[in-house]
Image (cartoon, rainbow over all chains, first blue to last red; front, side):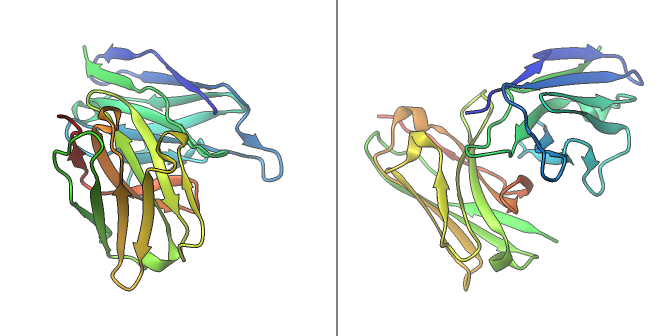
Length: 113
Length: 118
């Protein structure tokens, strides 16, 4: 199984500042035939289901604020929140869909400093 | 508006069975893969199973193979998860999710808690 390791496990960022989350894959998840990275990012608030933010590593889901961006390729990926807002407090997960089973990172908790 | 409304959770003893349901609306259910994803209390997310549009292909995480069965009824716009021989470690909130071409999950149900305990 592909293992996704997120770092840090938690981070505290001041309002308006940048938050950066890393997701490292144990295997390459760039499919050479279509040059796409098979990675998504989700946001989960307490007591709520996850919400899709980013897919194909960098494509923002409709309705997601443009302060959220995804980058990276191969085995190293990043989710960036350019200017943290109060409503961004949540746990963020990366997920690969390169093969079965699809797995998730362990999550990164983002809080306000 | 896409909606996935779940039902069927509840306390079950180890070795017992339970059936979860997920009623879909707001999209053409029969044209999408569908999945179940679970989350143990205070833990991360784990994909459990998925099913192709016509039910002809089903896939499971190893830990539930032979115990859980995913199914769907396209006439009723409904997804199901039959869980047999439940174990304490199956305790989790179970989510149904719309599975975009066997890739990522773009809509999720509200979740249903399944505690497995004696």
